[in-house]
Amino acid sequence: MPLSTASTCTSESTFSRHDSLFSFGVSSSRNAAELKSFLGNSNSRLRPGATVLPLQAGVSNKQSARLHAVSLEQAKPRARVEVDIVLENDCCIEGGYLRGAVKLRIRKCHRKEAHILIADGKVRVIGFESIPGETDRHSFYQRASPLSVITDAYTRVYDSQPDAEGFSRAMEGVHVLPFAMHLPVDSELGSPKGSPSLQNGVSIRYIAMVSVKVKDSQTGKRSIAHFYRDCQVWPRFDPAIVLAAAPRPIQASAAGCLSLVGGGKKVRLTAVLPRMTWIAGQRCYIHLSVTNETKKSVRSVVLTLIRTTTLFRPRHPKDGCSSVDPDACQTATTHKVVAEAVLERSQRVAKGHASAEGWWTGIAPGQEVQFAHHILIAPDALSVSRARLIEVDYSIQVTLSAGALTSDVRVTLPVRIVNFLSLDPIPSAGPLLAPDSSYARLV
Image 1 (tube, rainbow, N blue to C red):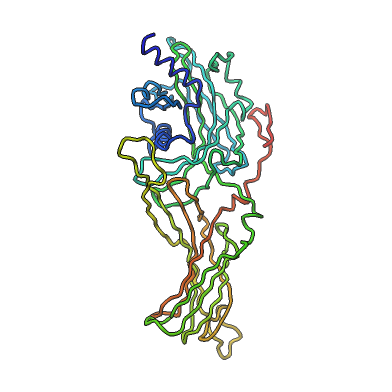
Image 2: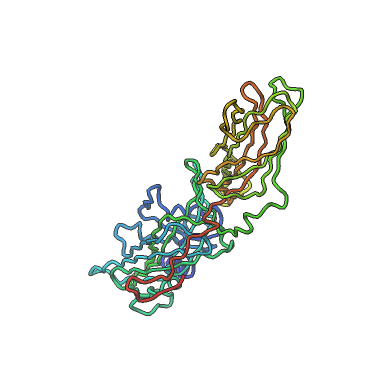
């Protein structure tokens, strides 16, 4: 058998056996290459003639990679098959449903063109992270479902029985396929992290993508038609567990002098949080215990919410090895104040007045007091555990001050911030109806 024929057969069998557009749990370099191939550039534009590599262990060099590469239909000058995905809502919570419609357009054949065969239509939801200065992206979440499972209208696209490889002839025209895709709560293919607001160049994104395998009935040439749109996926939490009081309260203590010179007696501060997890947009109350042994009055308390973003830049091997050790990386950490609450000492009792502005009277010398104050957590705050490239932590700094030209006493408490959507998901809209009311699916 000639080499070209043998290579073609190998490529065809690989294409038909494997889910060729995107794989999960492979090497970081392969993962980044796949994301780059089907995402396109910053404007989502694909490189002309763009291809994707099928999942095959035997592909070990560039020549083999070119032989096994499958073209992307959307990157062709004149696509035979075009797809689109229209979402009912851009926000999903794991355990719920992604709903919308897939639009499949089969272009009319020209006189010299053969019929088009299609197979293995799928909808995927993919979450990935990226950092500035790095061409690599890392996918941490994926869910995929065949169109045959999530819509009842997929069989109407065909006008022939499937061949040995599962391809069927597609009817020309535009097909609209309403779908409802379940996003199960499991971590086998990663867990969602939500959509945090991060610094420029740092992103955690989710896309909903539809893809269909395409084959020319005459030449046997293969390609993949795909299209994606941005969405959000949030984790699901049990409020009874997440908002439960900590077995041991989160506590931090410090003692310091208020005098710039130092020495002498001190102010002793203890700050306590009843639980670790708080909801973005809510008040976070901190209980304070202060003993003032100095001769100065404590005049203000400042609560500061600080976001700490840590970026992990992989160190790529210089020996040409394709694998990257996730622990071999350089870290860059930034801190940013995202919210602040200032509690000033109230006015003193004045002759002839029945009240005074403020509720907190400060801490006089020799006084020991217990009180609580709150800070409003930023509505876009969100803690993000590290997958590979990004980690976001939050902390609350408590600062006592006696005014200008004095030293401060401060402590820091760690907090975990979640979004309200993770505790109270979007209510279901009820039955899913086809445009012609031909079927209903309760979701």
